[in-house]
Length: 307
Picture 1: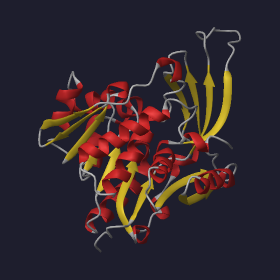
Picture 2: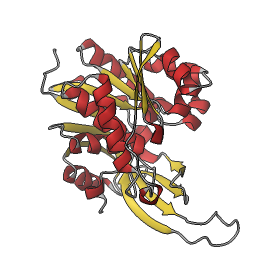
Picture 3: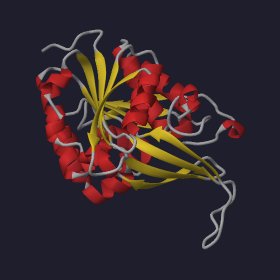
């Protein structure tokens, strides 16, 4: 099976209910801290899919597992974003939930209950899901539990056998530490593109600086793009950094929440690659989306923040 030039982007990953709490003062232990709190659809995989659709990709599909408690809500939110949901309902476990604590600098800290997301099982996958697909993206969260890791490995194997390029987002330094860097790298080794942030790149490579980390990882993966937040991104291939991409300037007063900025980069980057952009142009598109993402609460595009 040869991937069609105008084919779909298939994202396999996490669908999450986000509870975003923006607190302007430091957390006060053992008492109240005032906050603005919103419940929003999220998840690294789901967010990336939504940003890819918003960036112009005509067909974006998302495979993920959700609890029956919120399946309809997430289905509607994805369809409204232009994403075709392929959601597997789980009657035994609730939808994954993340409490995102966002401080006055817009930096976020996550409390994560993975719920149904990491129960995506090999039975939920079929090679037929790749029909009409031009690129597969795997959320790194899938690699952090046995059932979803096996599912990701099967999807990766089937995509490579079909000649479909695969990208992976490492997702979380905390979970990487728990799983083990070597295990993650072994699982993701056949991916064509790795999309870590600076902390994840350092963790995976042992490099002290993002440049050296990106260069080292590009000896393992054909293309590595390391996101640097407000500093933009690095593109590395063949053991060397080949480009540095600047991010649009976002005034501090407009930065409200960094939740999902990396997901926005991923979605826009992949949409641009599929549209024929080279890695540098695709990274520029990703940086523009990431800069827009920090100006809204939650991880979805600004016109999709409602319930």
